[in-house]
Each structure stands twice: as structure tokens, then as C-alpha cells.
Image 1 (cartoon, rainbow, N blue to C red):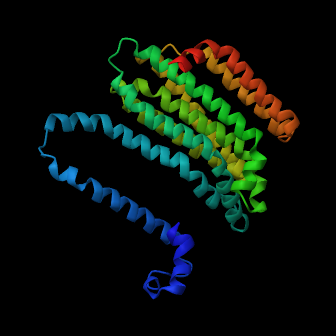
Image 2: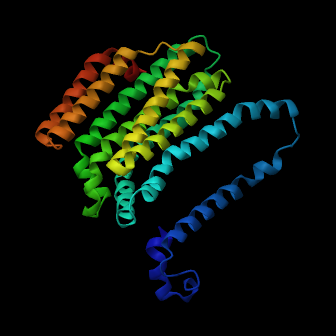
Image 3: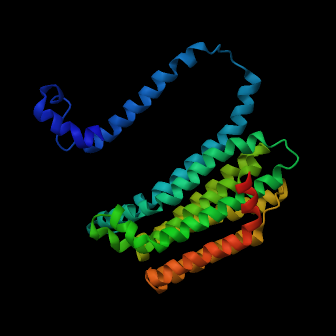
Length: 323
């Protein structure tokens, strides 16, 4: 905020700021601010690093490498899923339209931010609990309940964003030229929702030290991403990229669930989870594609979803509120 909004104003009044104020340097300022923030965190934590008594444990190191290297591969595959659609849009489309297509696609991708933030925050908060609770005899039942809550909240967020997408595009996409790609938002939202469910389902290979399966699944998802982008972009442009992202994350979710049944059975309430997901997707299709997010139709659909949710989960909701 300082670099982008206030530095130029201050440089007019104080010569001290002239040497760091440069024209057309906004993107570099973002990287510089991230560097300063990371450096500050390292500086604050430095006393803890100094106090640690270091020694090399060869046995522990080998165990950590066996666990972590597949996750590293999975992380690389995840980066392919997240970034290669823009790269391929730029490479596979004619030069005169590629830049525009990448721009509108990236802009509308931002509207999935609500689902991404929710899924990321949930994962960061719940994964330590998964590991701490792994030895409990009721762990599978607890994991199943947590995943059901994730699906409930995610289904609501998905439908909420679709219902109010035309308000959100005004707030987040100030340039009207970007609005043409709003039609991909349901695909991207659902893709990130599937990714969030996948992270919840992936508990089976993490607590059983079978992280190699995480690498297999992620690489498989990356192959789907690349293949579908190559096939769909020339004909459907950024819509093809959105479909490829949904197909990749949806497949990863289903494969993880299927393999998890064999190696670490968890009694997921598939009936209710499927109902909430199907209801949210159905109402979103009606709202967005049939009635163009007409509030006279969309808001009642959102209310109906909440009523169904409350009626179905009333008993558990009351227990949670009491605690």
C-alpha cells in the first residue's frame, strides 16, 4: 500500500523518497514489498533459530525424505494445474487475441478467490488436527464429519457467489472489457471446490505415510490439465481452460476417494454430501445460465438451499451451538 499509493505523493514533498520512487515500477514494488515482509519475519524468528541445538538424525532424515519428496512432486504438478492454462492460452491462440484472452480469463479467475480462501484457510487449520487425531479410535468418523461440514460450507459459498456474481464483478472487475469471461466463473469456482474436497479426502495417504499416492494423483491431474488444454483451447479459448481445470480437480477428488476406501476407509456421508453438492450446482445452473442471476429467482433459491440445509442438519447444528 505504501509503495503503490503513498510513495509518489511523499516524493513530491520529501527528497528522501526520490531515490526509491520510479515511474512504471509498480510490479517491482509488489515483489520488493513481499521481500521486505519475508525478511522481517525471518528477522523476528532468528532468535529461535539461534537457540536450536542442531544435530543431524540420519534415520529421521530418511523418513522425512520418503514422506516429503512425493509431496514436492505433487506441489509441482499442482503448479502446472494452476498456471499452465494461461501459458497455453498465450501459446495456442493467435497473437492478435492471445493477450486479450489471457487477460479476461485471469481477471475472472479472481472471482474464485472466495472459494480459494475458504478452502486454503480450512486446510491450514484442519491438517494439524488430522495428524494429532490420527491415533484416536474414532478418527475416521471425525474425519468424515469434518469433510461433511466442508462440503456444506463450500456448497453455500459456491451458490452465494453465483447468485451475486454480477455484483461481485462490478466490485472486483472494474473494467467492463473483462466481463465477457464471467461465464467461466461457475467452472472455476466448482474446480476450486473439488480441489478443497480433494485436500480433505487426502487425509488417508498423509496419516498412513503413503504420500506417493498424492504424487500419482497430482501428476495424473496435471496430465489431464495439459491434455485438455491442448485439445480445447484452439476451439473454445479460455472456456476450454476452465473446463480442463474442473476436469483435473474433479478427477483428482474422485480418484483420491476411490483409493482411500481401500487403504484407510472413512465412513463419509456420501448421501448428504452428494445432496448438498447436487442442490448447490443445480440451483447455480438455474440462477446463472437460465435466469442470468435474476435476483427474483436467485435469492429465493439461496433461501431454499439454507432451509433444506437447516432442516437436514438441525440436530447437529443445535449440538454445535450448545457447545
